[in-house]
Length: 515
Image 1 (cartoon, rainbow, N blue to C red):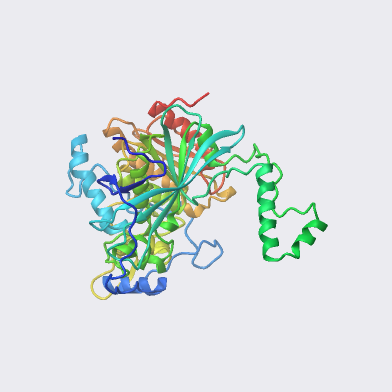
Image 2 (image 1 turned 60 degrees about the vertical axis):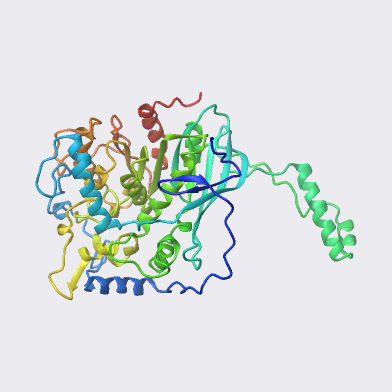
């Protein structure tokens, strides 16, 4: 029997989907549980350093070019040094020459290393997620106006094993209302707001005004004389019509006009974007409010886990083409989008916007943002083990450097092959800072390309040196194959690349946008 999605509940895990009864109230007889630890980010990081035997971290560079410790922006010393690891050579030194060897040997060892050393492992036996539709609205978006159906959902994570922490994943799903079949959909990290909430009619506003006045008069009868003296006063009135500006079309507007759907997934409802939150959120829930072990997941992997749970729900939604669900993000969410695509092979496509270090930019490259920036700042994005590669001193032994990490971002990209992978950047002049290292990301994309070639999908370019190959001109995308690159003339956003992305993806998935 086909599951009914609207107004129903589904229990969803990574491997099973089944109907669920309403969430039971917490048992009053539940034994007393230890409350989650409350720590500052500095305290949490110090605890992790102690677990790893790290006594000091290397300080991160400043983004201010005039500061004494400013980040390096000199290509002559940027590297990467040493060069990027070869995604088609195993750790044992064997050349990968067949797709079978990629899938059975090389890809698993890259994924395992990334899980253990960089982004962290997801704990076993993760709790189930129950999705419920909380509100449905028929709205209109963009210009010309397009009718859509918008649904707000809550994904409740089973916290029966540790009721002290509650995790409710927030997501809004928007699909065209005038299509006859399922549509491709892009999950986007961001606020789960309704795009254009429908408004009551003038008559309905007048009824609300009358009802509100009646309630106030009942509470204070003297107000009847006030309302009689000011008969034009409206406590509730229809707002003036506001026409959309055709020059400020949003990313969701572009998707809807391309015939796609989208889902806004609120990462803050999955895991906080700070180190103090690591004993709460989904990471804290599975750890019963205690600190992480060094190989456990950080926030990027937690957000990616949340995206996978959104996929579970959307893949059973009859309005969505389950074979063509993608993931998108910009900046830190661009990192999370790449991590999602790399570890969950069900996603058909990804749009990675301005992701920087921890995303597409090589960790080995000394340009702009550095590994030490992550270690001293956003360490909580990563596994605790990642701090080892930024240690200045250890209790025993020589500190590791990033050159000791056997993987780099070109291999993270390679985990996405041969699926549709679009790398997006803007320009520093408009706010997509040099700190993000656009050229380094270009190098990583070129160095990942051979994996697409091996799998019969073609990479960006063949037989070029990633160290010396010039970047394409701005606004001139390389969009002929399943690995794509485009640097637009905008700022720290992928908005100018949404339309090129959908047009590029449509060619490969065979989707015909409505005319």
